Amino acid sequence: MYRIAPIFAAISLLSSYSVGAIELDQQKQAIDLIQKTASALCNNIPTDGETTTVTLDGEATLELNMLFRKLVDLNISGAAEFSRGTYQGVLQEDLSAIVLASQECTRAVWTDLQAKLIPSLTTVDPQLSPSELLVKDQNPTKLTIVGADLKNYVGSDKTYLTVRVENLATVSAKNVKARFFTPKSELLDKTNVHKTFHRSDLIIRSGNSYEFPIISISELAEVLIPKTNGWKYIGQTRGTNFPSDNEARQKLCSSAPFELCPYSLSMKGIAVSLEYESIFGDKIQTLSSINVIFGKSGI
Image (tube, rainbow, N blue to C red):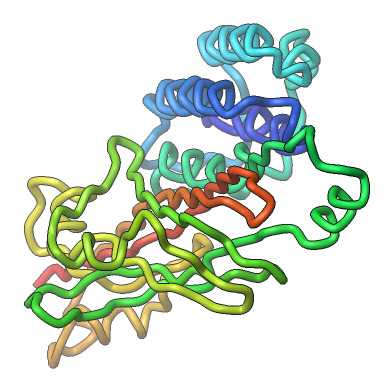
């Protein structure tokens, strides 16, 4: 049986709160709790056979109750309703398709929580006058990921995975910092490429975009698929759709006949944390994600 669907309810209950209700430290603690619970719930998912329903067993119910109690302790008030047991059956029908289609349970949950759990965090300056607050409200600062691609840089023989961030606001974003995480650790590139394009004083003006190099594709494969040779970068997506059969075979099978080229695909998630300041002095953090697809042929 699948034991993971109700964890999406835990993720979703946090996404509807006002930003001011949850402090950054509480958000980080909540992420850690949900991520650990997701891993625990995914441990016993079957790898074969056919499953058409999503149910809770006793052990999963206990794990969820522990999670919700801890979220209540973090003053995440919506968790109280779920801790009383009303989460049972909630969203299971809708989520079953997501879970059943997921090849990697923990990755699917982790990727989903990046988009749903953490809202933009904004601190409000109490010294602003009502008119200044109105101007601020009418000119919110918003950075968003608009694409990802491969790119080569002068002075480096490596190919980098990059993300392009665009400022959709009418005002500039200051001191922009981008950080990248796998479910296990932060991706840290210590090359000159990183030092050149990741600056502490970076400003992205209204309507402009900026490309952040994450890490080289060769190093990324080693981090995301450790101790496994032969995996090749296929592409990236903001969603959860794999490439078509024809596209995958074209990239993996070279000149071999398609019918003689079995292959495997693996999708790995990368969380993207954007931290920046508005012209009004607000400190803002947003968290989103991209998915990277690797493939391996059987010939």
